[in-house]
Each structure stands twice: as C-alpha cells, then as structure tokens.
Amino acid sequence: TRQLTNCTPVLARCTAPDWSPDGTRLIYERTELDPAFEWYDRDVPRAWLLNWRDLATAPLLNDSSRLGGTPKWSPDGAQIAAYDRNIGAIAIYELSTGARKLIATLDDVGDYAFHPQDGRFVYAQLIQVAGRFTSVLEMVDLRDPSSGIRQISGEGSAVEDRQPLWKPDGKRLIFTRRVLDGSGIPSAQIYAFDPETEAITPLLQDANYFHGAISLDPSGRYLLMQRVAINTARPVPSIWILELASGRLWQIAENGFLPRWLP
Image (tube, rainbow, N blue to C red; front, side, top):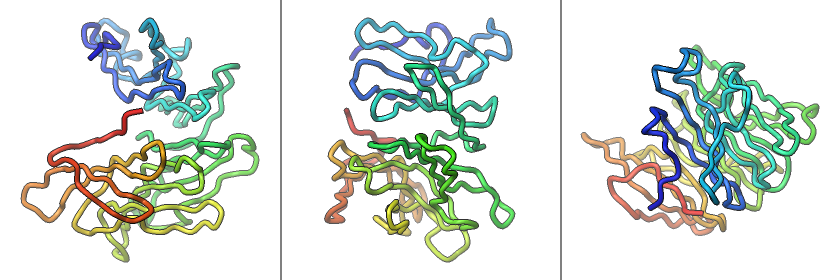
C-alpha cells in the first residue's frame, strides 16, 4: 500500500476519490476539521487534485467560496463535476479554460454521471410528490444547454431514482428505483433507461433485498452491487455480481459493503 494524502495529521477528512481516465491524477473531496480554520472554511467540502507522479496535491479551485462535494471526472478527462452547496448547484468545470456550467439541484448526494461519448449529463433532482420529498433523474446536454431539461423518471412519478451510471457504450443508463405509492416494490431495485426509446425496464427485482452501491466493470458486462436482506432480524450487507446479458446473479462476499471495481 501507498499513502496518497496526509489528511488525518492535518485534521482533514478526505473522501470520494475518483481517478482521471488516464490514471495520472486523482480528484477527491476534502473537508477541513481543524478548529484553527475560520468557521466558514470548516466542515464544508472542497475538491482537491492529486498528481500521481509526485503526490503533489492542491485545491481544484483558487476561490475558497466555491465548494466541491463528490467531484467526478468526465470520461475524456476534460471536465470535473462537483456539488457546490453554497449555490445549490452542480458545477461543471472545463479544465482547459476554467469555464463553469451550473445545473441547479438541491440534491447534494453526488448522484450524477457524464455520458461516455457525448455531452449528455444525468443528475438527481430533489422534488416533492404527494407531500414527501424524493429524488428523480433529469438529463441535460452540456453541448447545448438551451435544449432544456429532459425528464427520465417521469413527471409526477411517485418514485425515488438514484445512482445513475451509463453503460460504456452509452446505450443504456442503469439506476436504482424505489416505488413509493404502493404500486411496486418499495425497496431499491435496479432498472435501465434507453435514451432512444425512453423505455424503463427492470434489470433486477427481488422484494427481499435493498440494492445499492452499483458499479459497472470496464466492459459493461457485469454490474457489481451491495444487497441487504430486509426481512431478517439483523440485516447484513453482501456483495453480488449481475451478468447483464444473461441475468445470472451470484454472491461474492458476505458482510461486505460499498464495493467498487478496480480500474
């Protein structure tokens, strides 16, 4: 193992690492906890960059008022998206120019994803349905912001959609969904969205489990996930793999959580 940051000795919390597509840099979220910092600089997330070659690290932005929670690279390494809760928006930075695009949303969890080939960008939006708050998925085209917002979840749908991720070929978007009005499974299940037909189809449904922490292997054939059995006295998370083409599902670890594929 190799230590990449010195966050703990300087009283900082570093989380949400994301490697650049070429593997030379790491973007991550850093939160200062040191009481010596001014109150407005403590306990707020900012995006930091780390150079793999020499482990040099510095804030992504010079302006400390611009926050950066859950930063993520675009597939071409040209942009970084991060949530700025000071303004209630996802900020997308063009690294070569410093230009910034803003997507307004009150959902600060970091559920957003760049399309692997073009400018489409999917994100979670916080809304209110039938007197309760939930999240739905929306899509914009970063190449043509004037084209407007495209609804994925459906207007007024009583669902909670989260964790969007594109297949490597960009032909389907995979996400988790909870049905909130009693017409479907209330625990999170796994679905796919076809951007051409706008059809939403289930990939994995089992009412005995709550699904999450989904990620695709680089080939797009296998979906890694965390599953929690909900009808037991002491639920224990486990790690499973779903082969998308065949629907074959198997467990690879018990009492494990938040799995991720290695690059």
